[in-house]
Length: 514
Image (tube, rainbow, N blue to C red):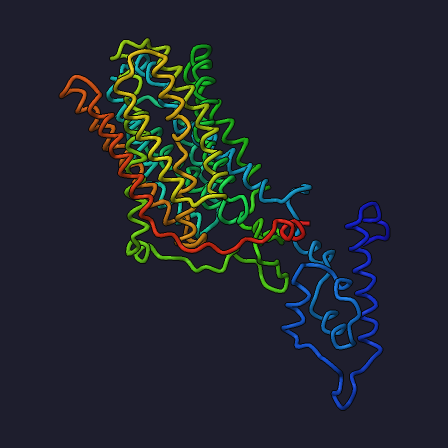
């Protein structure tokens, strides 16, 4: 390191001072010899001294005056911050913790994945006009997309735990790009089912909430809930951004122009993720934000956290797994299955105009960003299971209101309450999964729990439609959904969560990330 490189900052001055002192120590080690009778006072063992010098990840000047044996141990076993930095470099120099870069890339990947996965909903009419396919046939392809999106969750979770987020994100974006790109030349109905249904559905599973769970739990201890809230708001944000944009392009240049736009966005994001994304803090010489651990350059980098992977068979013997899966089944059923599928038809049945009903969905989407982020922020401060129970109770309340709504003002009240808790269940569910089964298993275990979510969505979407045909109205379906949400709140309160370890001040982690 050249003289004066860090002279402009206190941190640089400390590093320079550490290097100078280290050179002095090494000179002492070469010119002095220990006493023949081994009578040196208070000699430290190799292990205890290394542990002492890494207590605060600082340099030798933290320890005052040391005897020769301590100096010798330091000179042979402890590296300066400059030496560590030369071995492990950040792919992008940032003035803050690098985990926020990983969060940003994950957010963008989830946002793009949500936009691509939900795009067929705006392609229904133009595909119907061009190819003559029935609306029911196109809807079947979309249902395949939704089912495989859920089925991909446990597979993606295993891949995330095995190979890390970086490869999974690049692979998912690449597969989505292939699927959406080939739709521009499709001519047969089975092309639609295979490309939009199978290829895009499976690929989008790699950027679903399983990715958010893995990234948040690997990179953060402090503010983990807030990160989960931010990441899980990307799903609705992607739909809010892409669907209106896609509709505009379809009207202007046709549906193939929309497919090309999605292709370009996916291809543009792939190299950014490949170059800047890292799987674990240890990959860049850091520890999770707020962690009590310290980075040890003497050890080969590995996954953060000491917990072992929990196999699915062991998780299946846990009551927590089944309580989370059961409550998440209700979450998927009342969200994607009931409200997501049947809210607009129900509103039209009640005499509310289509435009007003669609505007309600927009209100719900906007408030969902607030509610999801707030949910993540809250579970950093209160018990996740209590917050999860409260969210389910609010959802049940909103569904009890909906059958009695007859005008837009009442529908707006429903949209406010429901929008705030729409995706707010995700962050506490992931947090409980991580705390119970360990962050090295959160991807695979949560993937199976998420499959239960999509199973509930599929069954309740069909069930509500059957009730509408049978009774001629949706009231009974929504009342049943409200009752199921209240049951889910009780299930959440029944979860037995492990005792939390005390967190250290983030100041220690900021030192690690310096």
